[in-house]
Length: 238
Image (cartoon, rainbow, N blue to C red; front, side):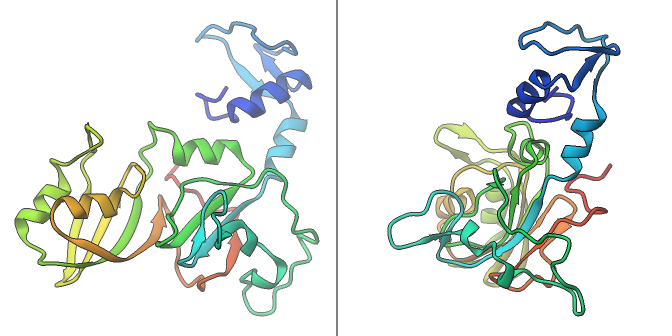
């Protein structure tokens, strides 16, 4: 079910136990049932309705906030998800979401404490899997300011030829914006990857901002503000 994108692995167990999963039109309510590749799996209307109510949030994370577990002296980015920090078009209100308590809201694709920009938090395991799976090919775009001389040779190495922790990195798209700024487009998210890549070519990152994940852009969302993912938005082109 997870491989098909119907739900996350954890959600699959719950849906099966509730009797909301069908295999070839028959209810399956026991875990561990083997399903052949040619068989058809579908979800009951109750499961589909619940998935539509799952919340995904886009936050413009400031520097100094941690994505996941808070460190001593710092706050978690999720603490910014309050009614007062929601970004709304003029004339809109929060009537569609009276409560701002979203159980199970989790970060899907971290930003380190020294970085800022687009951060995704979601209740939807399908979206989390889409963004953070080791096999994900979703692009993440970053604007990076560096200290040091930017040369063609360094850019070529950043594009391909680098390894971290003994593992070769996927090719990255790296564009020179000016004498101190680069644009990185990655399809993977190793820990502090861009900063470590730059260190390998004698460049020091002084500012890092994520501006896009897949087809979703940060746009005009102010720093420290958040909004809901819109119904017509998707991280991957259908």
